[in-house]
Image (cartoon, rainbow, N blue to C red; front, side, top):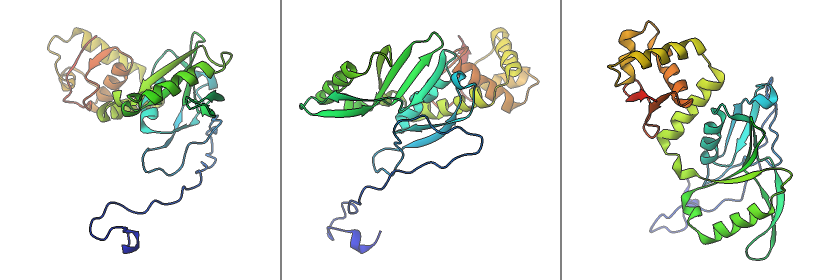
Amino acid sequence: MSIDDIEDYETLYGIKKRPRQSVIEPREIYGVSPSRAVRNPIGTSASSQKTTFVYRVPATGFRDEVGLTDSLGETSVSDEILISPETYDLEFQALEFPYQYPAGTSRTHTIDMRLTTISGKRILIFVRYEKSLKDKITWEEIEAIKAAYPRSEADDFFVMNADDYTRARRDNLRRMHRLVVFQPDPLADEMVFETVQSLRTLWLMKDLWRVMSLSKARIFQACNRLIARGRLGANMDAVICHHSRVWKV
């Protein structure tokens, strides 16, 4: 930052507001399908952390595909959805439709995500942080969006509070998503699960080291996958490691 960026030379309140930058267009990635999004949310922002990542779903034959999210909150919600065995498809920025804004003007909204379960149910997912959800105007807008979405495109509408996902929970979900989807190890998972069921002295994850022939890394990864699938208990709001308390479910 140069001296020209300072507006108040007595007290530095911040830098000058810069013009909005153009949208960042993700380049083609060999072997990875482009995003199915109807809107590209990726750009520079001082208030939200927009992300791109690769994911897989049964609907596309587990083909690598680019996902685009408007915030870390959306990314964490998607990580949790993608590790669920009930998920068939997940689309980002999947649907755009007009709605009547509370002030009376007509606007266009792009839904954050559309989840399709293995039963065929389609759910639109709207993600906001708690500060925004405490605002009456926000809920008026949500109700307007909920009333306007095309019923032919979805069966239900969910509102998610991004602040339910603590920093530790986000880190855990990101790791679990990678291990469940990209690094499966069914044999290790079953070996660890069977040991957990029979080990009476189990308290910490590292207690499994002494009674199993698997490597520490493989046990750790298996525990994360079991926790992700709800087959092993742990505190998701603390970073999961070898010293974490784990329990039978």
